[in-house]
Length: 422
Image (cartoon, rainbow, N blue to C red; front, side, top):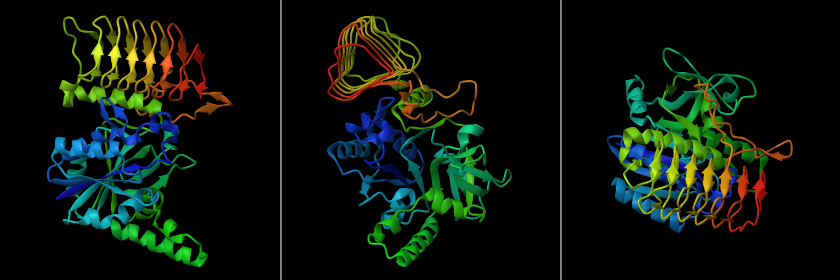
């Protein structure tokens, strides 16, 4: 039997995801109509013999998270539990701390997935790749090709082209190492705990020498990438499975728009029922669009490509929306135009207003380009990026909001461009 672990992190992270992470834990942010982490769960449930999915993080168990877990268990008919860390334990510390829960029932192997990636999740392919290896205790990491310059922002893998063994692993190197990067999706056997345990012992030893006051916390914080993979590389235990499918990180709100596009395009194969169709008397749909059944959209609106419309959204006459996510309860009054933006929960955009951002898309001419995690500011100026309206923002009629971030509960009175409106 198999299990899966999804690492969902915690509240001190996700700062690049503000102001959206104020309202909902980042893993529950809706991308292509469903919470981000639901895409992971769905992929795991398609693996035969998957018995349980564990979410590990240090969010306080809140109502939104509990509600999500209950509905996901009902939908996917599989036990899904949340295990809360007492502190940020890192990507390896969390699974080591909860190793008894992961190993209960004696799984032959388990997947580990980072929640902030968007992917086609080739889990079954990783599994058969693992089963082809002669060593049953080998570990698999998913890799993909990046371009030379961007590879420096990721974990870089040097692998033997015949055996796919990982010979060398460097997390965010300062000079070029390899174009094969780590996707943050792994397949481990229980033997991995022996290697994480060795790091734990070593950390404890070092702490005894230092006699530091809160050593117990620091010994348990273990990073899979720097602490485990770096030393496993070259030992004949770690292998890279290279995917040609789509993959992207979701670090910033801008990357959520890109992930929205990737998942929507994947729906045409895996979930055609989720995509809106052009119907007589309905709005004009261009490309891939998701509309929640409870949303009300005027027939003269034009939506798409790459648009997700959430629960209870109201879209008036002549509205144009493109490359955007409209979150639940928002209202777009007649003739508004929304491009490359995220409109927060319960926000209202007045008639004839225009809300527009600048996409931070990967270079379309480079098949291996990834999305840049842009800094918010460059040379003291706000980098032009997608426009984000937090929850309960009111935009008056006939104004233009361009490349701006508006914090929650704001009522604007005029146009803004390239600003963070506090």
